[in-house]
Length: 305
Ligand SMILES: O=C(COP(=O)(O)O)NO
Ligand SMILES: [Ca+2]
Ligand code: NA
Ligand SMILES: [Zn+2]
Image (cartoon, rainbow, N blue to C red):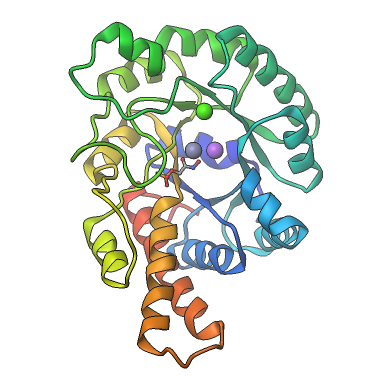
């Protein structure tokens, strides 16, 4: 059933598990994520970025909202990294039940003002809001505290920010970053900082840039002809610890893309004569579904629907 992001995330934070927000760009990703959620009896968040909405248009947003309504588990349809008030309005009009306004690159007062404005519009139509404070950036452990404060989320600022904006959940910067190159080896995750934020912010917390970029997946991508450098993702133990400290929504995009692309390459390499898209998109869809199912196991959301 189609529910708001807060309905899913409030329960997750209270009960100490995480819920995956999986970025989808096409029919196969949508089907993979929803089938995984139903098989795992897990709530799930379908995340559409502005790029996804541009690429898929009404075909994608209609499918996402209608399939969410028909799903046998709770599903929220979420605008990922909304960059403007207008973009949020388009998502609201498309029937989304969760919207992110990402003004974390702006100064504090601008972020507060813009987020507040989105909260008013979204709440007026029963939709919940994700905001962001702090700069997503991979950061070395030894980096000076004041430099960390300049980049990562400041706990006291987070408290004030959530009180002044009325946002429903907060994306925090604690050392993760988007994409396949999150740092050298095991990225440093500032759990002490997260603990301080969680003590001051009772709202569900969100972790961006959380893909694991597992070595076996990177290897499979390379073996199929893909080119990728020294890739590194977030260690599963760091994900579990972050969830135990208050993270309720975990964003995964890169792992799905790597799986989908590797399987397509493999299928095309295996049979150069093939030109039925279902013969390579189908196996790719299955691979994405398996990644989603394993992420749900890691997050602890299996059986929570
Ligand atoms: O934060 C993400 C995805 O992060 P990854 O690149 O680690 O999958 N989407 O908003
Ligand atoms: Ca941001
Ligand atoms: Na988001
Ligand atoms: Zn993100």
